[in-house]
Image 1 (spheres, rainbow, N blue to C red):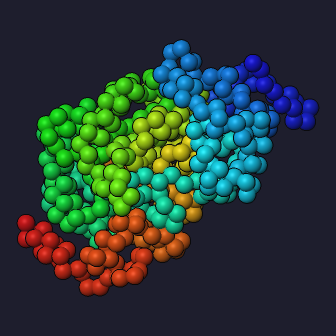
Image 2: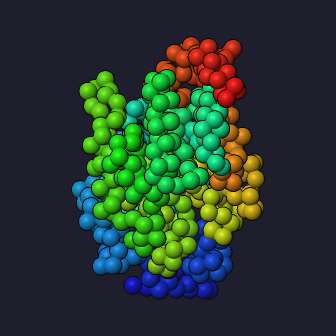
Image 3: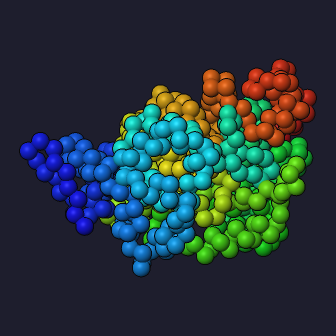
Length: 470
């Protein structure tokens, strides 16, 4: 099916929906690299106007990635909830944007709508949104998850404490871990990227984190960011696995490049649920969200599995994969892949807000690693801007890394102090159970949402002395 729009004397033609979506996407280097971007600003505007006039139903009838050859497309179409979609089924993409910005689209309405939306629909509407639209709409979405603590409640900001070390040195990891806890970080997860990625090392790190969490009765969860098959082996050997991690993508080919398919993710989720390591909450339910997924614009193009689609649309499809497994956390590592896909701070800021917006509309518990690589045209001022916008938009969690500099992965992210700044500036608080623990342990002053206690809590002072003497 052909699409077109006229601006002045020129009529712009778009061969199919895939082409229209690519041309309408705001400029980014990855789309230029793949040849799907608009060649001029005028062509991009024409594509966005043609997209705004497109009925939302079109995305149910014209697949961007073939249904017959892609299991992600089959997942999206086969699980679509027509009844949930009904309230907006008559709208165009432009009308849908207007509806989302209106008062009728409140938190309850958006939660009910989420199963009726496909990733292509939310990607389409994001392309015609301003940054303030992406913030306002996402802020109205609420996606709450639980394992040992509750994440995603209004006016709460959680953090992933990331105590990576280039040699997986136990003392180095412990020092970063202690530093993070003393700054009120770690309620989303304590997650380590292992430098040595094998099952034996994964198990050693899991036991180490489990001892810390159990020893201090911290209402949080651990995760070693290894391949899902390693985690399955670790569980089979009796390791204390809280969350199963995996990088995922928006096409079957991308996931195959990661060494996974949907059946493998289902197997891992069932194995983790069987361990029943989640907390029992006051309502009698056990924390059942056991998956942690990471994504990033550009991974499909790297795998040559993008099917001629723009990178942001494929990224949104990854959130449909995540949604199917009821994760505790989904993290877009927005600037990590590099300037080949997001060239500068402007592109990274836009991409981070789009990712958060699309995930939240789909009912996914979105966080963001506000980050960049050292060869990108970006700096910490760009990251401060994105961080503030994301926290205003209700982002579920951010990263907490010593000095904002990951010494193992060699990229720039957000620090423990950044979380404190956002909590104090925007009136945000840690997760409910974690906040109570911080005050009980005298890390935060009693009754304070983010004021560090002075002097150092006695329990942690002893731990610090042991580390210093090690």
